[in-house]
Image 1 (tube, rainbow, N blue to C red):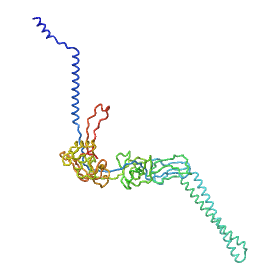
Image 2: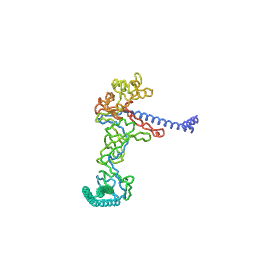
Image 3: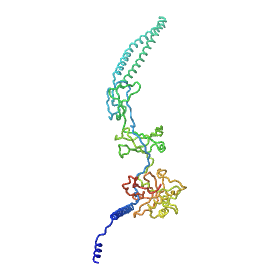
Image 4: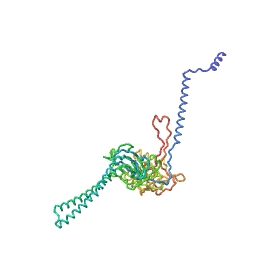
Length: 488
């Protein structure tokens, strides 16, 4: 009995031996449980983090500013007045008295051409004229003698004291002497004209500035031989840079909006934010066709008293088709415009904007707008997305498509009813009717219904979780952006 008890006690005190395979499997299941719990915790954390990121309304303030609609085009700068100074006589260009960029005055000497040939011709013409003038005295003396002989023969003939032959000879000599004097006088006139021409050719060897301006280019260098027999070679160009002309290309689609005298402004690559203004002077009727594109050339002038504009500069030109200055402005995204045929009450238009139909999707959001109560922007946006996905579209007169702001309503003097969502002082949204004037792609003029400093909802700031590290392999994530306040 004692031995049995001792054996039982030894069995109880000795450790229980576990097979190695079972011990290893237990450890594996423990590690798997820990990993699953970590993944579950991370998922719950990410879900909580995503739930904290929500869309926020984009708030804009009603301000006083300018609105304008423009048509843009590319252009280049040209001097309004320029002269290509050329050579009218042939010869070697001996001296240039100006360089590119020099300011010259009208009548200033610019260049000299070798004048030896012209000087020789002038001297020869002067000598011939002097010889002819010396013959005048001799021929006039012969005329006086012939006239006296003719008178004498006439008296003798009356007294029958001379023959008819002597009388006829004296008369003929008188006529010949008179003709010789007239011929010599005409030759002298011709010689004087030739001398004047040669002197003019001599003057052409000295080239003077035809206008006051700046030397913008030099085409010939000293020592070059000029041939002016066929065409006048250009030596240099003088331009008046105090007034520049902008030549801009106008598309045939925009030519109907162009009117003489309309306001224009342009910028240059080197001018920064500076604007130069002018008015449209002329549209050339002859088009320029490039790659089957019809373009017309518009011209307008601009003052350049400070010399900041230079020839051939590139200009970005804007034709102002309509503008409003110092008016109340709001972003276009904050407005909801009425469709033709719909009531002009703002709440009804707000319901139409949200795509609400009686008993359909978005009717609750629309009802909140119609009743004048607070509007849930997220619910309205969700209702609109649901309506679009289901194939519905906002109701309009006879199903007409909504006209975008900035078309017909962009004209000066046009007025359209619209609605905006205003943030009151207590933070509650309310829908308010406004009258809108001129609109552009960005801003709209508010004629009535709002005051400066009020805050309106201009859209929705769409939030999205930050993309994970695998976004580059799975595609780009959705960036944070702005959704306009209504569909248009």
